[in-house]
Length: 563
Image 1 (cartoon, rainbow, N blue to C red):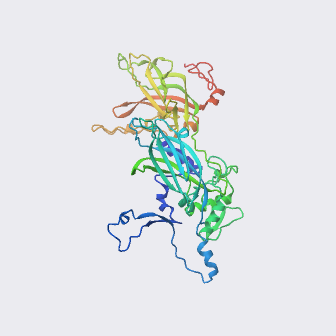
Image 2 (cartoon, rainbow, N blue to C red):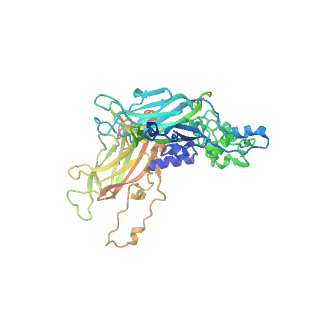
Image 3 (cartoon, rainbow, N blue to C red):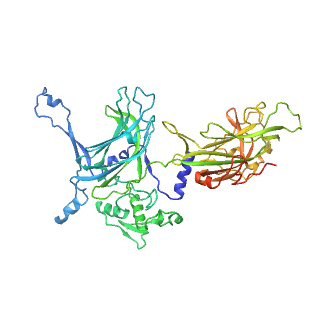
């Protein structure tokens, strides 16, 4: 969650568009988009004076559905204007052919209904609209997975109001002993209501008008065109704009783009940001409550067991008129993991609390052989530094470089471990342990430090600033009943500011960190470690080669022999 919060704050600082995530079906938040048309049940009329034994009277009274609206208008004295006033705001009637683009991102906690699979399933997608049915077994199947990442989309066409219902299904592949597929669940979407709604959910509006990049505008109409159409549909005069496009007046109210764009430096790149007039129109549309760019989590149910949840699916739908050329589809496939190399240079450790087989006695120095062990998420073996022999009182100088190679998935902010059936994703955590060079003295580490590269404390500039408060998981142990207040305990002044960083953005950090170990339920400090961490991709590592430890090529940077 800390990493997600950091990313969210970064988007807010740079004023980048943010998706709205609806935890349920989007229509439940907007009264089923019934602002233009509503649904009414059609029922069979009972026969007057009918025979109580007549079987026809016992049938289900519901015989269909009527979709429309009932409105009462005040007539204008000039009868020639009545048609314009009444029907000017009525949606177009008659069959309309539309293009439908269905984005299906991920299944969420899908039900496991197979009797031959243990708490798992092999889900794939099926989409139905009108007379077209797509069973995408080859393209969307995910093996042994209850939270499959589909990351795909489908283009379809239909005619409304004739065939308005979109059906998205999730199936379990070969879920029976006979090799049959089992329906996990489905969700149904009324496209007609979305197409005709004044909220315009047919294509969500991005929060910023960008003409390039991953957040570029994807509607077939520009914000200026949408705003003009919306004003005409609601009987409002079309907007007027200032000469520079930064201000606009709508229905007696003035809007300025400066109200929505807080930091001018974020909008300097003209190759990315569209013209001011379009940006101002977009902000007005968002203020009027039109649907923003969104994803929705739709519940999947089985028609045989209505009302029983079978999981959810993360998705959204874009709708465009068939007469207009649809824009390029949005890329939803997750980026491929990137080959990364982490280089950790351990310079020294200080004040490590060590043990000895024979107590040296009061006033005598403790002498231990110390080494550092490095481990990265997903590695089967740890790397080991050379031994600093006869380290005095837990102070050792190592000057040793560790190198860890891994694949990093930026979207998940995790390390990917390739698997035969399914890939595994782990937090990018590097662990440095201070060990005794003689296992006969101690097999347990004297102290260690865990650092999550995507959210880690920045190294301290001074050794005495490496306090436990910079470790996110640290909690102060409770004071004992017999402990007495000592003013000397409160003389220490800690670091001026504790900050955290994402090493994949900062690239490099150098400083001091505390070493600690667990005693009971709490972490206790046992020493300090000074090191440098640097992360780079494969291309950068090939341009700046460096050897393990102090081996050749001993460069980038050169590590001297410890004195």
